[in-house]
Image (cartoon, rainbow, N blue to C red; front, top):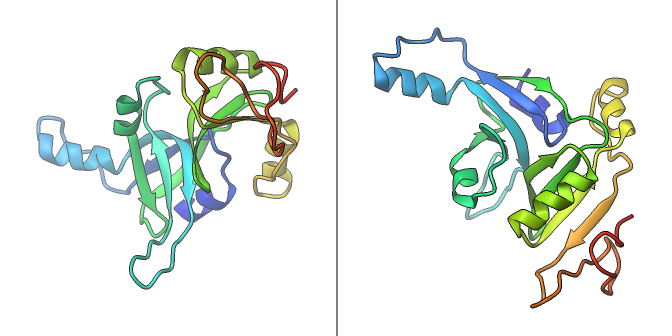
Length: 193
């Protein structure tokens, strides 16, 4: 499967294997092994960045995979990410998709978002969010129809997801704003339900 197929069809939160056709070098040849390992591994799909045609700076677009788990430490999270351009010559395969009912926690950067945690359910997502103290995030519950669309239509649909947007916290209380509303909602847990 090509990287473009992952970009267009795989769900955020899918576990993806990437590899090249070369054989694994011996581990005692550290330089060759490190180069091989950079082109062969497994990671969670955490971001899709569209191509940017521009006169001053263009990009073919990328997918971002995160190796390992989802640590709360931002520096460790950033260090575990690897971008692959949409013209990559590697082979990509989805190993596992997120389960229905699991919840994506996405860090919002302007018009772009990146997956920072994949929780088993809404309650675990709220607990992780409270412990991590991340701000400017959006929570998306993965619906059954989103998973099924991948099989039926060969792509991931914009399934029925429950959203919760959390803007920067005012001092004192943690307030939330429901997706699409202008005003503040009540205490966390009341909004987005």
